[in-house]
Length: 94
Image (cartoon, rainbow, N blue to C red; front, side, top):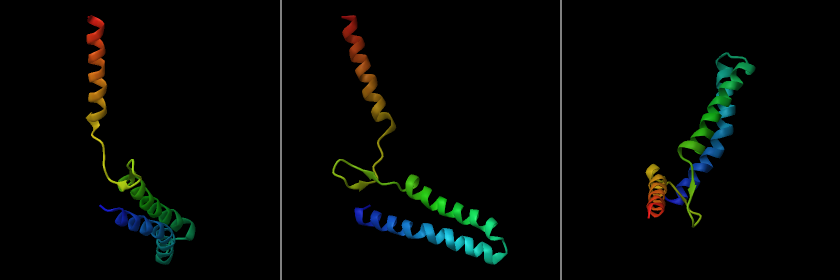
């Protein structure tokens, strides 16, 4: 995914947060809920939008500063650590 499309996604998210809060609250209020009951519904929807942007489609910066979606392998860090322990164990037995 290019950097431009991720920027566009976050622009939409920033616009959708207040729209969800106000829109869902107004919709629930029009349906018949009181404002104090409708406001948490709008806040939950806005929170879901923010959580999606932070945790599901999170931007990950690489060393050049570009936003990419690269996730490191879970075993990558562990294999290096284990191999270094083995080499130290081999040196101690000599």
